Amino acid sequence: MKKLYSAWFGGYWSPYLVMALAGILSAVYFGITNTVWAVTGEFTRLGGHILEFFGVDISDWAYFSLVHMKGTTWTRTDGWIVWGMFIGALITILLSSNFKIRVPRQKRRYVQGFAGGIIAGFGARLALGCNLAAFFTGVPQFSLHSWIFIAATAAGTFLGARLVNTKWWKGKPVLHKGGTVPVVGTRKNRQPWIGAILGIAYIGLILYFFAEGRTMLGTAALFGAAFGILIERGQICFTSAFRDLWISGRATMTKAIALGMAVSSVATLIIILVYGMDPITKIAAPSTLLGGLLFGLGIVMAGGCETGMMYRLMEGQVVFLPVFIGNIIGATALAYAWDHMGIFNLLVKSGSPINLITAMGPAAALIVTLLVLGAMFAIAAYWQKNYRFGEGFKKGGTTDVR
Amino acid sequence: MSVDLTLDIRGESCPYPVIYTLETLRDMSKGQTLQVISDCPSAFRNVPEEVVKHGYTLVQEPVKNGQEFSLFIQA
Image (cartoon, rainbow over all chains, first blue to last red; front, side, top):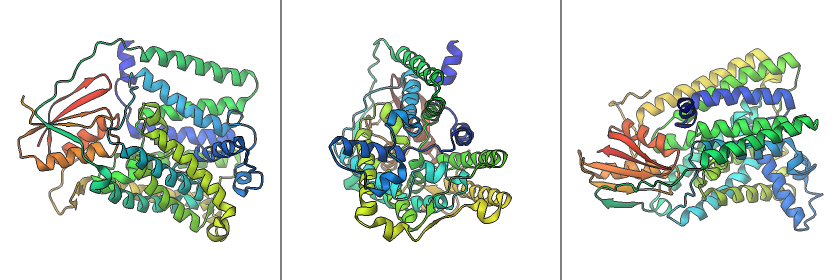
């Protein structure tokens, strides 16, 4: 029992395995609910509810009718995906005794996180999705907008990486001479017990949803927790998938995410064909490009995207609280600017939803998608092998990495 | 084993643990040992990986202490 426990919670899981599983689960979730695994749409609705609470009349805001403000976050599947992810991640963090209030020593991190969160929230909603709906679950829907978004995000993270590497942004760490003997505490560790109780209570809630006949809410609560557990256990970070390429040439996440999207594309196409479903296609427009660029910049400034932020916050990394608040403010600001400041007319109206399946048929759509993902994987592997911190690409003298 | 420098980056999140560690190692002379103390869960994986990729060696197993850990790296 103890051995089994430490195999699951002693160390982190392989990011490749985790992303492949998330890819299959997100395809199944689409098959059951006809919606995709996404989070920022719900952040926008949360912003809308906050405005309503303060008496703002949002009934004529076009963006809120676009994302549907029906019910509360507790009666929506998109809501339970978000809360399920928070709770699922918290359960495994507690089971592995990894919760700790982690306070950044440099106060500037709060400002940076808040600013980055706003930019990332604004950019994601401008593009109609974050690293999920316009990326990880967008590509398997064969929606062209996600490819534009991915390319733009990569460019945005390049700008972000340049910014965070400047002296005034990163600041100075604590460095002193000699070694430091860690103070080994003997405090009782109650975290796994709290995690187990929380886990059981949450399973109870899911069963309650099913018993009450609210099958879709139960499904969302279940899948949300599964996604939260997976991204926490795999320490999945979409931010690092691009940012780390520019910084030290680390490509583990890039490769894992490409693999996960390939698995998900095959699984999603099977579900689309077998059940005769329509893929979810979003508008590809100049807004997708600009949104991706802002999103890429924002997530690097914040140190995490809208998904990574969730489990980091549960780990007790307090710097992600201003990031979360910033995400909601940014998403809400976009909802305002959408019609009140002419963003829709200027950047979105000219676009149209383009789906690869409709454009070239299912077989070609899958082949093209897998080829591009394969190329992404190969470039990432080459990058990891040849790119070095502070030097960039070096001729010769490569080190072998797995 | 004698440690020459300690880099205390508790509270710092990605990408700063990797950046600070590689920067510090670059400024150290060859053969010196650096201890990195961190509590960033991702850093437990990406700092050792990047350090080895950049040609440095881990001189002993990481020491875990609750949610914190120490890495010992030779420049």
